[in-house]
Image (cartoon, helix red, strand yellow):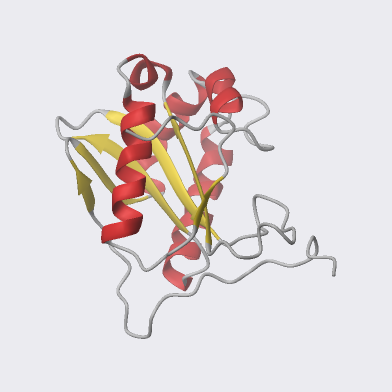
Length: 168
């Protein structure tokens, strides 16, 4: 069977409330939205090569404008509201912008294959260059693993970044 044309809907238990605040050690995630515009544009534009190297995928291909990013952030808000995907902005407890993480349905970011159809969520993330230098890329990966195990009901996450840290 050819799976490439399909996207697997994210499935959560009836009555499950998707977390709007996730914390792990010194990292805090909240839904990504238009209020993140300034930090998001700056973070993306100063970290283009790093995002492409670590996260991979087709985005970003060039610096983003505020107009472009505003539309993208509103789109993330609507998808979060409608339960199609869940995107979070990540800060440290001191309030510094770290980056973003995404919980997408399988087949949306990564082409669905027979081997991937058993996974229930496509997880990806990126951090700013400054945050990467402080080790936050690895820490955010650990936080995502914690959040998916403790806060969500996804049993088989697929981490689709190009650079996957060794679990600690």
